[in-house]
Amino acid sequence: MPLPTDLPVVDHHCHLSPSGEGVGAARRFAAAGGTHLLLATQNYRGTVPRTIEDYRDQFDTTFRLAESIRTETGVEVRCVVAPYPIDLVHVAPLIGLEPALALHREALDLAGRFVREGRAVALGEVGLPHFPVEEPVRHACESALDHAFSVAREADCPAVVHSADLDGEGYRSLAARAQRAGLPSHRVVKHFARTNVPDADRGGVTPSYLARRELVNDVLDQEGPWFFETDFLDDPARPGAVLDLATIPRRASAIAERGLDAIERLWVPFVRSFEMVYGWRPEVPKRGSA
Image (cartoon, rainbow, N blue to C red):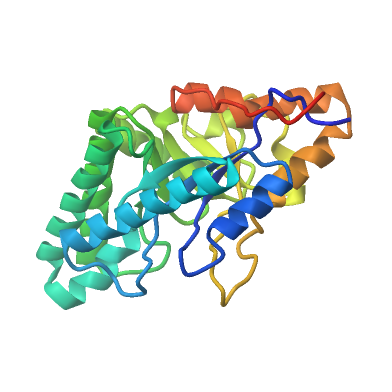
C-alpha cells in the first residue's frame, strides 16, 4: 500500500556538508520518498570555533546549504543551530575555561536570535559531554546547558539535546533541569535516542529515535510526541554513518505495506509530534495518487 499523498516523510535530525554529499544526499532522500529534513548545523572547517564570527560563519553555511537543497531538490529543510556542546570542552584548553563559556553563551544567544528571525526552528545540538571530563569543565557544560534552555524558552522553540543514551532517571533529570529554566519538558528533544523508554518514565521529554529497524518497530505504537532520525553525518570517511539519509523514507514505505493501521501510526512522528513540539505542521508536496 503506498503512502498517503498528504503524509510527509520527515528525518528529524541529520547533518549535511558542502564538502560531503550535501545536496546529492538530499536528492537520494527525495528519490526514496522523503519530503522534509531538519538540518542540524555542524563544524564545517574541522577546527573548533574560537570566536563568535566563527559561529556566525558556521550557521550561515547551514542556512545556505538548506536553501540550496530547497531550490535544487524540492525537499523542505528547517535548520537547527547552536554551538555543539563538546566545543566548550575542546576550546577551553585553547582560550581558558571562563572565556570558552562566555563564547558558548554568546553563540547560544546568536542561535536564539536566528530562531526569533525565522531562520531556524530550534536550538541544537545542546547538551552535555557523553564522556568523562574534569569537574570544572563539567560545571561549565551544565551552566551552558542551563543557558541553552533559557534561550530556548525566550525564543519559544525546542532544544535538541546531545547526551549519552538515557534511562528513565536520565530523562527525568533532563526534564527537571529544563523546568527550572522555564522550558516545558516536551520542548526538550533527546536526539539520538536508542532505547525505548516508556512515556510515563520520560518526564515529558520528547525522544527522537534512531531509525534502526528493530527500534522503529518497538516504538511505533507510542502515543507521542516522538520523532525518527538518521543522524546522517555526511562524512566521506564514514559513508552512510550513522544511518543513510534514505533510511526513513524506506522504513515508512515498508511500514505502509502493513496496511492502514500501520500507516496511521506514521502520522505521530511525521505530523502530530511537530504540531505538539514545534508548533507547526509540515506542508506536504504532492506525490501523485494515493
